[in-house]
Amino acid sequence: MTIARIKKMQERIGVEPDGFWGPISIAACRRHLEDMMPEPHPFPTQANVPVFYGRKGEEGGYTPPMGRVELPFPIFYDGQPVRVLRPHEKCAESLARVFIRLAEAFPDEASRREAGILTYNGLYNPRKMRNGSAWSMHSWAIAIDLDAGRNGNRTHWPAQAVMPLEVMECFAAEGWMAAGAFWGRDAMHFQATQPPRA
Image (cartoon, rainbow, N blue to C red; front, side):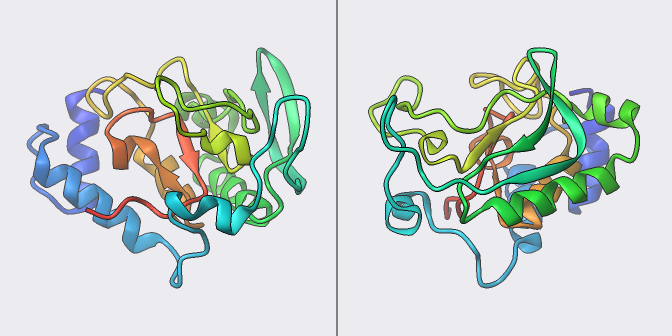
């Protein structure tokens, strides 16, 4: 992300726009997104995911109960249009509202393409976290990845990754956690859990 864009983000979250994304900006961004989240929070902490959502999916076996989200605009997986998503039924209505918010915040194809929200990289995938032993939130169909090519797992946000804060705000308003803001990386990833507490 350019220094100019970082400065605009800093103005938006209420800190001095100096272009340096350090501890003050990180904390302010997290507060900004947390303040947008519904109260009471609609989703569990990550530790309580199995209690709230039930069993995780299993490759070739059990699949969590899925809802249906008809998108207000098509997104693209490997160049193919996707018009319906199938997240876990307990976060499906929320994800539908996220995409309505995204459609309003980015009202045309050009702005959506620039924001990266047209590039869809998956939702349900019963697997373990990369380089870890815990199960990925994708195993419950409660996480979605967008624009992975520019916002990958090891790519620092916002110094290198480019996921706009405005996209994170659309997810936060429905209680979804933006990994880029709360982990400082993996900015493609949004999950229907509470953010980690400092």
